[in-house]
Length: 90
Image (cartoon, rainbow, N blue to C red):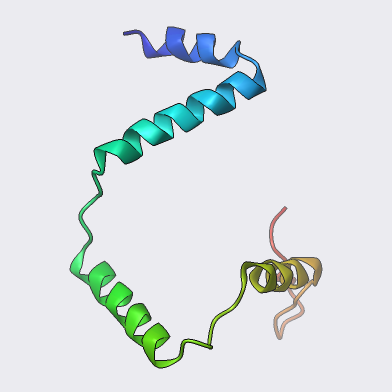
């Protein structure tokens, strides 16, 4: 299989067909249920987050709250103590 030829054929598809293709590929990956191994640090972090959620189940943010806070941060130009802009790159 020549991946370059395949990619060229894929880019010739309509957006709708490419989305369907991506969904089919993703579904085939998910069906195999193969997950990467987590490092010990990642396992500890997940355990910490689960424990914290179980202790404080109301201490969460909705997706809408997260998006709103990111929007506020990205719309404001922050500067450090020397006056340099810390605004996000665009």
